[in-house]
Image 1: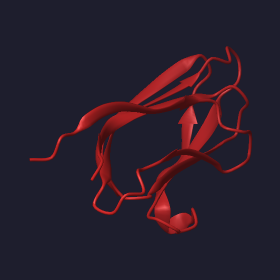
Image 2 (image 1 turned 90 degrees about the vertical axis):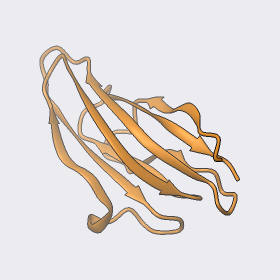
Image 3 (image 1 turned 60 degrees about the vertical axis):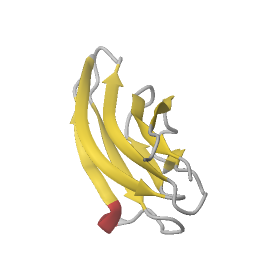
Image 4 (image 1 turned 180 degrees about the vertical axis):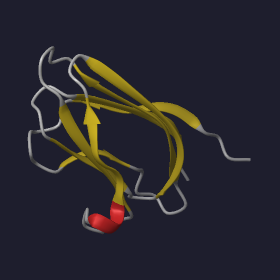
Length: 114
C-alpha cells in the first residue's frame, strides 16, 4: 500500500508578472503528488489582483491548455481557499503568474515517493 505524506508544497509570493514555479513533484518514476488545497491571500488593503495557476506534466511548458485557474480575481484584503484533488505525476510542475506584488500562495497536498 502506498504511503502518502502530507506536505506544504509552497508558501510564497511569486514574482510579479513572471511565470514562477511553485512546486515540482518528485522525479522518481512511479512517484506522484496530490494537490489538495490552495490558499491565495492578497494583503493589500486597497488594490485587487489576479492569479493564474498552471499544472503541467513533466517537461511541458505552462500554456493555455495547462491552466488550472485563469485570471482568478483576488479582492483587496481577502483570501481565497480552494479545495481540490489534482494528481501530479512524477516531475509535474505547479506554476503561477500574479498581477499584484505581495499576493501569497500557499499550496498543500500529499506525496508518494516511489
